Image (cartoon, rainbow, N blue to C red; front, side):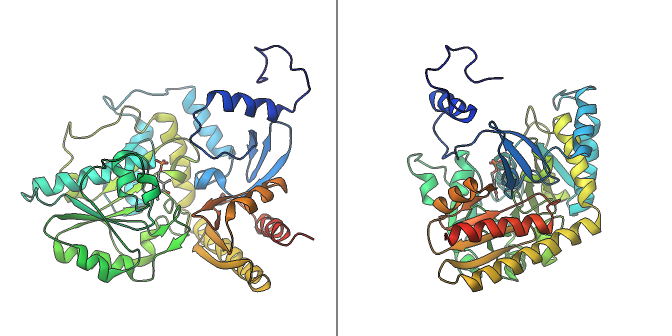
Length: 411
Ligand SMILES: *Cc1c(COP(=O)(O)O)cnc(C)c1O
């Protein structure tokens, strides 16, 4: 399709990209800072724009396309489901959703699954769960959730309030009550913040949007102990870190702890919209019939795609491979940092969620990377985020770093 097919021919010839972007600017809500390319096709870690230019995609749909663009197995499964049954609502049972619940609960050790459509919704389910559990325990005064500075939990009113970044709150006040932000990684600060109204702690194992910041070793374990000592729920936001991204099925598993509940979304459906909340048997008892729900949650096509992703990451070799590629990338990025210490400040992350913090704003560098054929984005002001598909090769990771180096050191 051509963007201008319903309009008169333009006076000057334009590229397809220019025409589409003009149309986008006329009609889309201007709430994103969008990079000026229109992507039309993808395969693995490569995508192509409306004028046929090829890009190396090391962002992977912001950590969503776990198996890469149009992975043949996901395509085949989703196609077969599309030709069979799309959606029935949660008034009825459906096979792909039941299968997905069985797979995810086995993988996480959290025996109850609820399905929704996004990360924010999965986190809403966590927040509602925490309040309801405390009501059911007869402690309704416990409604507050402790979250962390620089965190990101979504854009709904409750999840944006949970998000510890004032720039996302601005203009949306009054914000819902019941959220407290403390410094990330600071157990003592959390201990001090716990009080008679605390219901839960909500934490990301790695702050993805906040700049790919990894929690110090022992932090999640400390939070688990604090929750146990005070009768709080430990809620882990695995929206970005879950589904194998860090080399374990879920990032909390690196610390050998068991949360009361977790949220999932990004990589779960390989790019199709689906989110999930997984919780313990005890906590799950509070969300009884009629207390929570979603029309599209666990849609058959999305759940079918998710089943392929879960089967894929259940293979220990796949997880080892993610870890090894992450270590490879990280070692190469540190070499680059050693060569360019005045330009690169830090290299962070785990598995295939990596951040390279620059000494300057990341935005202009990311724009020049795109012009050179590399797609990445920023996490925080100065960090370039890499969240490629798990099928990425070492050669592609090298290629990405070569482009970044070229952009950082123009001749
Ligand atoms: C992306 C993200 C969310 C929000 O997910 P949406 O699908 O955009 O609602 C929540 N938490 C974390 C950690 C995320 O990375």
